[in-house]
Figure 1 (cartoon, each protein chain N blue to C red):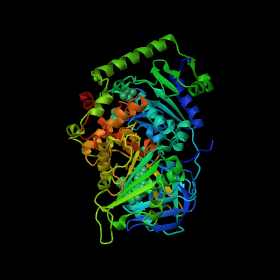
Figure 2: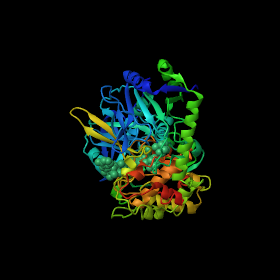
Figure 3: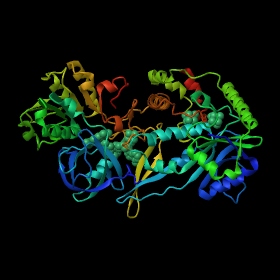
Figure 4: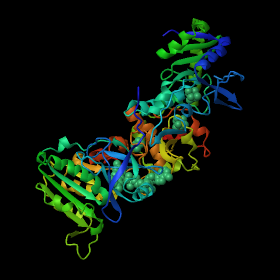
Length: 334
Length: 271
Ligand SMILES: Cc1cc2nc3c(=O)[nH]c(=O)nc-3n(C[C@H](O)[C@H](O)[C@H](O)COP(=O)(O)OP(=O)(O)OC[C@H]3O[C@@H](n4cnc5c(N)ncnc54)[C@H](O)[C@@H]3O)c2cc1C
Ligand code: SF4
Ligand code: SF4
Ligand code: FES
């Protein structure tokens, strides 16, 4: 597909056009971190494509932490709303890729995820400045969007290099063709340079690769050895709730005046009662076992079935960890 | 395109309630909103309380869905306070059925414990429906006490059916009990089937699964012919929520029945 340039001055107009069709979410720097915020044409628009992924994952948007998934006795229909995710980083695209496989690939598909996903256009952005928490390079990713997204953009001196990845992405650029130019050889050269540097940074931060046979090593490891790895864990489970690839959920029913709502909430496999069965028996009553299970889920089972890790290398679980447990240190040991 | 909501339970009335033992009751629902095959399970909703997974205990060929349920906790207790005529919800069926085509022409060795007889009854009735297709059906069943034996009301008829061989045992007998006493493995000492060719099908509490599996392996059943109903925590039933995971399997999708061959590499597969 052709590669375009959106001159810097046209970005606002472009986003304004998108906002006519639906909600637009973009990264904004607040204090020291970027956050995923909703575009409001009456507020100052200061997107930040330089810093790493936003603190919030896009899972909040595609797979909300709380969602009514059925009403009883009569179910209600839901309508989709068009939305645009602007500036999503490669790691969060891995999250979407995991959800696509979990929710859409096998029957029955999840109609709620599907409705949101089908109404969402993803415009990812390069990461020129990976930081010390990033390790997307260790889980098979480059710090820019190559799949899953509809368009990937790179901020260069003249504006934004727009590379459509899906037919919908191409269509979107065509629909606003007046705002775009063709990207020049210099624009693309600059993009290459930025990408090389970003990858160099990632290589320096993460000098060691994970073992080639990581899945088998995780599987054959002794779950008791997890005890040392999780020694500093204070059991807040923040690492799982902030994770863009974790997809565990729980259904619970709530009585309303005349109906019952079935609500889906995010769940996390570290909770002691997560696997407890009727009557009280618990196959993973010990945190060591639950730790081991998480690593198997992400780096063994998912890989076995899907050929990719259910980890994006985004580093959120480490950044937010009260016990400063670096997931890489655990993985490097295997 | 209209899309079926897999989380929505279809409302259905309870037609009849039959207490089987002090802790186990059969709920006959008014109709069968969906077809199922023996071995598949469903999620049963008590409105406003929640849902839990159960395998129908009725024949897949019957007109009404039946579940035989033991009272153990939150959802099951609420179900036990339901009355005939109350509305519950069902969704499903989920999981894989027993591979009946593989059982054709064979002796079938069925071992159950406690409320584990419920799913096995559905299988048993499905087999009975085409009894000529199978060489012989064996049932070995253990309960805690004579009062805890489920389907006592149905046993005499089954025992008198040609091609069916039933042996029972109880952990603890009483004065009127004339049968075997001891845990279920005591009636597995002498296994009258061609073990190398027959499937063994087991359902019961985890501790029973563990010891019965050991015994069946010892007796010479093929590892891929030992079918085990796996207990696990479930929420979605459709291979999405991750709750039911045992090793690399989603019990709700890859199970709920898995063979010993499939799970033997898992450390402590029985809860
Ligand atoms: C495939 C399959 C088939 C089965 N078939 C049968 C059958 O035919 N007959 C039968 O009697 N049993 C059957 N069971 C077992 C049955 O599902 C359990 O006994 C039942 O789930 C118990 O539910 P409960 O709420 O009464 O028990 P509880 O012990 O109260 O709860 C069961 C589970 O729900 C969780 N839980 C409890 N309260 C909450 C809450 N407030 N929020 C979130 N989670 C909560 C618990 O942690 C526990 O994991 C089957 C199980 C499976 C997996
Ligand atoms: S992990 Fe990679 S893609 Fe994600 S923010 Fe860091 S550099 Fe960017
Ligand atoms: S496990 Fe950690 S690094 Fe991997 S995707 Fe989840 S939060 Fe990011
Ligand atoms: S019950 Fe949700 S994945 Fe099996």
